[in-house]
Amino acid sequence: LKECGAEYTVVPIQFGAQIQSAEYLAINPQAQVPSLKFGDTVLTESLAIITFLAEQFPDKHLIPAADTLERGEYYRWMCLSLHLEYAAFNKLHNLPVDTPERRRQIGYGDFDTAWNTLREHLKNRDYIIGNSFTALDLYYSGLILLLTQNFKVLPADETDVLQRYAAKHLARPAFAETMAWAQETVAQMPPAE
Image (tube, rainbow, N blue to C red):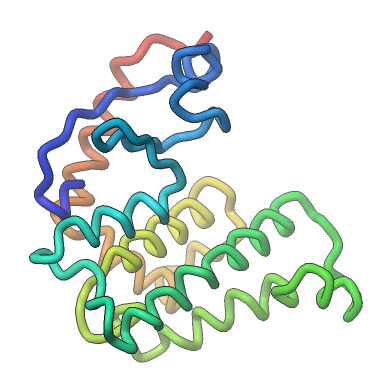
């Protein structure tokens, strides 16, 4: 929302009883964040939200034009991110992906193959597609941060291609402001029930 320059109100939701409350489950039955209320409609899922917002603010150039090959590339890397998330989830929970048959069944091969696809793509690039920042760069940078710091399934080595890529985008003023706000807000919340 900050990257878009949108006017918005944030309603902090606390994990625990509040996120499981009937009031919040009416907004997002999955009891997950984020959720975006836009008019009378609620959108969930980070990637859907950032793509929708990028389309709503075309003057910010956060998504390629709809009639371009670059938009197709945006969708390609958007869809691939789901495989990367599944691969990370399987690694985090030590789910076996140790046979060729199992790799075919899950659709992304294995953790190293999936993530090396992205690593190789970003080797000589600053952006996931094209030559400028898009909403997808924000999404991937956040995903890399989550999988490095929280879940620890990606290396924290600053020389790693993924870390260099993410650091560039996470240093953007809008992200830094949002993270500072989030940390301050969380610090002021009472302990979760």
